Image (cartoon, rainbow, N blue to C red; front, top):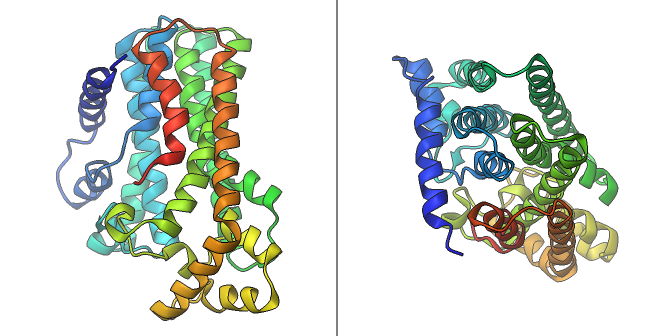
Length: 328
């Protein structure tokens, strides 16, 4: 079933809802709007609203909650770009490049608070139990994502990161907000605990597959697809699953080629390309298989919900399948 018109309309509604709380003037609001308006697939709010629609929730409240998670996501991106010293995001200069680090920090803080303003708007008229559950879910996400970012930064200075540590890190930094989005859609529709657990399972496995696919794209994509310079992950010392597997499986010579470029911001283009070639040879197929495994886990969780067919359900299914094949 073609659900594109459903998705397109939701994106317009989510964007309008986000901007309704960011209409202020001056550099602070301009900086805050920059990341929101700079592109993005709106996957997290789409998941939240689709789940709410499937379970009989109110569309208006789901739109406010969807806007909340997307604004929260933008807050994390602004601060991540500062920490990673990234110059580009989705092919455009990052907030700290255009407005400076102090204003970028403030813009991120503003987005953080605005996400709570939006969730409060979503919860008006809801029972105290639903309000507390939703706020707890969103607050937990902020804590967990922060823990994940801290781990990601810590890993940059280590060469002994394990696959289990990597999965734990991306579960927190990336997958948690996918899980939160699916769960909040259920919370707003007042789903029972069993459904909420399965929705989280769908989201967390989808998010892990998404991040592994993102790591693969960072190795195989071009600058236009990535929206940032090629091999940025290698230059920044990111311990992706590709790096972890290659360092574990590679010969001494191959490890040396990787470690020469990994985390070395002055690496030459040739050194980065050589490291990338080793990663492709040693770990690309493994990463592709791992992403597929988590995609299948996400689909299994969705199937266990026994939800009715329709454009919303088809979107959630296709998302779990297509996320591992994306090119941007």
